[in-house]
Amino acid sequence: MDSGAHGCADAALALYEQILDPSLLDGVRRELGLRGGGGLFSDALTVWLGIRRRLGGGLSVEQTWLSCSSDEALRLSPESARARRGVLSPHASGFDYARRHIPLELVVAASEAIFTEAQALLRSRPEGGWYLIDGSSLTVERTVSLAGVFPPASDHGAIHWLNVKVAVAHDLYSGLSMLPEWGPMHGPDSVSEQAMAHKLIERLPPGCGVIADRNFGILQVAHALRDRPMLVRLTDVRAKALLKGKGTLEQDADFLHEWRPSAWERSHHKEFRDMVVPGRIVIRHVLGPKGKRVRVCLFTNDLSSSPEELTLLYTRRWNVETDLRTLKQTMDLELVRARSPEMVAKELILAVAAYNIVRTVMAQAAEKAGLQPRQLSFARAKGCIEIFAARGPVTPESIQEMLVLIAGRKQPQRKAKRSFPRQVWTRYPAFPKRKTEAIK
Image 1 (cartoon, rainbow, N blue to C red):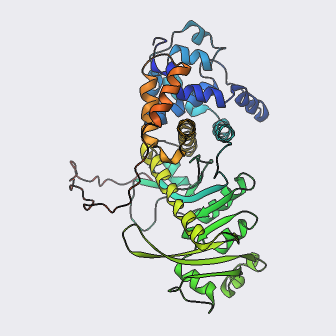
Image 2 (cartoon, rainbow, N blue to C red; image 1 turned 120 degrees about the horizontal axis):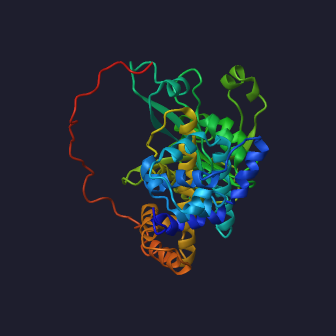
């Protein structure tokens, strides 16, 4: 592979080198008492190639390694004799071994460092105090080790595909994602989105608030957020129980309320007995995206904003839904192709790191154009990075040109309803469904 391969010209690599100091990973190795980390596949190069896989939309291990240039290897593994000679093997077995044996702690440290440094680069954000929390699920192919950690649903017979439950926290302004929480969706050790949300809340930057949907509109989550700004939606049933004769769901409402555990919660959960969360309940009826009136019941500890301001702020929670779609589709995380629980964790963490690098580039492009990062297209930004990576050696001028192109087209603001129904052609499977017994 010659030094003109597209990796050496990758603007994302330039940003990766800027925000992740390789000495950080060396320090983590020393703290953990781990050996290794030298040779061609240094921690910095192995992590970068894992990120490159996701930037390429889920490249294979072989494609990822073939995209690596000798110049790129030298920049990230300067102590390697093979990197200095500039002759790289055409086989991907070395990279495959390195990605499977790099300690998970180093991958976590790299992803957290990218998130922290990306935040530092975007300090001028006007709305960076709010985070959007939501949950989703990923699919993994069944193996013996994965089935032991992520068991299938017990009431659906033999199932080949397994589910991993994930909870995420994304910055409202920039879209940057914290390291997510994940766990089994089924089985005796299954985890809930609310339990994972508790762990996310504990890791939030100081002073940041949370906007969350009805799944998280429960007393336990509100109590965990009592010292932070919060805006959580309530189910109609819960809102009706909290009203206690102060109004009806059919009317707009705005009143102070101290959220206390119900009699059932006190009898079944002793830790709930002393929970008291002072706040405010806001009920508004707004026009939904399909032209129908929608009831929005909110609980917040913001006592100064008007109900209309709070309702408008809550509508921006939808951004986390598009963020999850980006992670699962654009970053090819819908199906995690890994054979062990540790590799599932590494793939998930590196996908988030790649996502944050693209988000950082988008924020820089938006700042240059006087726009907000979420006004730009993630897919367009990722495509521009790939295109400019293939054009030649990276220069400050080419990076600036790339930022201009990324910001050259804003996301459309569709106010009118779709003029035609959303329909798809029916696709029939080319092969019959496999009926052999699943792996046990």
